[in-house]
Image (cartoon, rainbow, N blue to C red; front, side, top):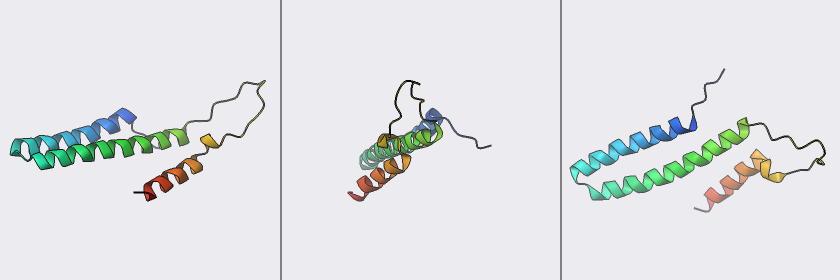
Length: 93
């Protein structure tokens, strides 16, 4: 059985790591380092949230359509298409 950490626990760990480094830079008076850490934190938080969304999407069963609804193909729920989109976006950088 795999142990899956909660989303908030992961984000709290990220916050803790960056907060400690930011506090050290602040104590040393290193404003450039503080700005770099702030930007890095925002970037890492965004990337981590995307990865957590992908993880959650792969784990969650798709919602069941109502019995009277006709079956339909929804490309928006295709995790492989989502990963391909993310790969294309990251190549633009």
